[in-house]
Image 1 (spheres, rainbow, N blue to C red):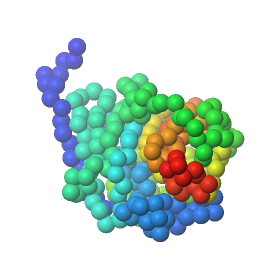
Image 2 (cartoon, one colour):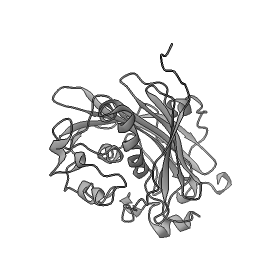
Image 3 (cartoon, helix red, strand yellow):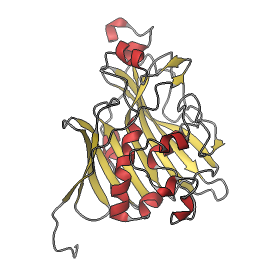
Image 4 (cartoon, one colour):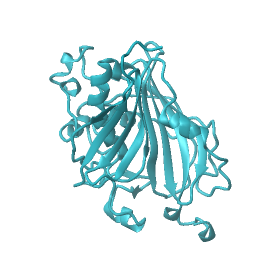
Length: 305
């Protein structure tokens, strides 16, 4: 039994921020992504969406306020994306915390439109996360036409990669960490080249939202037919033995852990591990549910759209 005199949840609201679009020039499989305005319009979207992980930065001040530096060592943010955000719209983080090592989160636009919902927690022992719960409800995939060559258990090759301040992150993420930090919604001296030594670990750390960018340097696991256009549906970034340090080399590996479909998309869940090769310790993991629009794949049977 807790010794706390009150069990009343605290409702924490962060400020409205205006996230920036960084993926207008993103390319994969030789074509533009959903973050390109023309591509988004062809799919019937209101605009080119800002990448979902961008919104995670607005929760870093809350995680640090609740749990201190442990947020970067053992924190977990787990979220389902509900509505897309386009540049020019404002977003506010909202947290409901009743004490302990977990909280419920949501983000909404300035007009109240929901952006995401999920959980924050700090370990090393975590309660079930938002994505833990969602994976428990998944149904059999049924007949697939884009992901039919993929199987649960497919694995990538293992590679080594680092997140540096000045190196751009390829066609998927055509910007550097320094360019991101120039527009990030919640900046910190702990992130920067010239002030990172002020962090509790004596070195610059990678912002939570950029850990998924590091994970994207891992080769694919399984085959996706294309060309076809994808988007992030659910994302969890979990620190096991963090932080992830800027400029440090890590070993990346990816596994397909679930496959399914909705009316508009076929989707696949992957778990990417980020390991310190010098010790073999798991530093972080990225659980991603990525959807692929059925209508974006030319050979998709019309009677299945």
